[in-house]
Length: 349
Image (cartoon, rainbow, N blue to C red; front, side, top):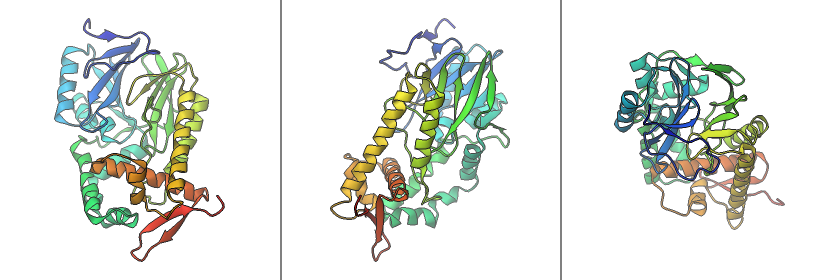
């Protein structure tokens, strides 16, 4: 493949590769950047040398644009067959093309059980995205009826960006080991961004496929969902980060789901923890003058116009921090006559 670009060292990378062009980020590992129809406009996927073929690590969204890119990749750039799909989590930018690729090339899909079942459940019960408990979830926390309508209906976009999953899959769990070509990877899992996202580390070559759990310049979304409204995903996320900081050395090359490859994962984890601590402080300070609902906190923490998808992410991420602070005993609640809940700092804290 003479048309494949080769980058031998990403320690000082400042630019991203062209969309849809494979980059050999390390021997036997191709990095491909795909376009997304969101504000976060790209996702990284990877092909890993698997001996007689290539293992696929995440797939991109299940839309016509991505299908055309995959068709061109397979015709013009990829010199060996695909062997298997490894899908990190159920979000459409990572799982979207899995059904199409698995069916077309008869590929097994490797996933954690939770992420597989979550995606399958959305396909089996799409009406649940507009169920009463979803609406009550947003209304209870202060979102008005018009904004709630926009948020709950945009959830159906998931079904338009995912090509489905095969009826069977290969389950992987934390501490499992996968032999991919000449490399051995240990599977690790992390919660918070999604319930059981898988990441992989090759100790011999110090390669860490970090998916969306640890990103270079941005913080992955950590959200409370309507099906677990009192959940504490931020606590799970911070706990996952602590485990990864111990498992991944600073010298390892991280290959993330978005942004550029980077080194010093433990250092980046400290930055992410500091970011979330600052968010918690912002929420408590904003609620000192008067109790605020989650919806009222959105413009306080996000100082730009948000579309329905962004409102949903911002709302659910603020609630993740609120639930974390409630569990820490640093916030308390007050409920008004319309059953909307607001928050204020615990006296003396």
